Image (cartoon, rainbow, N blue to C red; front, side, top):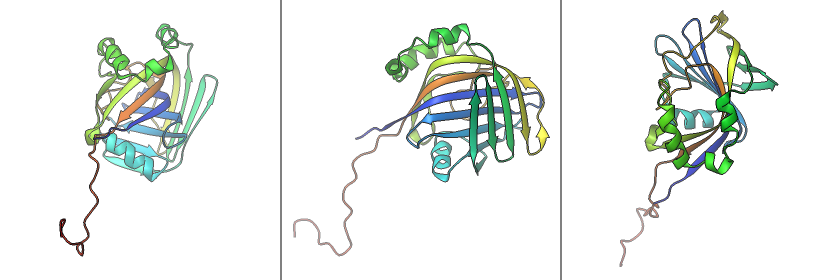
Amino acid sequence: MTVERLRFDGWIAGVGTASGTRLVVGYWPRSPFGAFSDVMIQHPDGERILLAPTRRIAEFVSATYRFERIDVLPVSVTADGPEWRVHAGPLRLWLRTGRRSALGLLLTAVPAPLARSPYWAALCDVPARLMPGVRTRGSAGSGRREWYGARDHRPVREAGVVLDGTDLGGLAPLSPPVEFGFGSAPRGPSLVRVTTTVELAATARRARPVRPDMPPAGR
């Protein structure tokens, strides 16, 4: 039996809007797929949408999380100090972060190897559960396991979102928690640096297929 672990190092931004739509942006400079960004959207009626830059990434993400709709289109994230801008088809998102929080100061001291450890994620999961919907480890789709190692935290102070030409209103908490996977982004709008590890389901080494014209073994 073999187990494969895929690691993604980057940032996750989570923001709510006055309209009730919540968004989670992943910005991944280092990943098994190269550098990419994606966006997960959940509307007040519960509909979950994935915006992914390639079909390959869309297939991987949708096998790990749950969505009612998947759109493959260019997704770009640009950061200029505290200002971040996201362009993804019909979506335009702008946000401004505040200074690193007290939690962020503590997280920056976490060594990278420790942030990748499932044992560290298990330890952090205890205080994380004090925040509604937040988890640092759990079961994902397709028999996968996943854990997060946070390495920085900055609050989001301002944001603006336009989707399909409609302004979604001012910044608001992510409430209720988003439901893409086993856990949600924090309720308070934030930008978190994370190392995310996805452990694929164990698979047995496959035997070489037998062609119909091959004689049975032993003959």
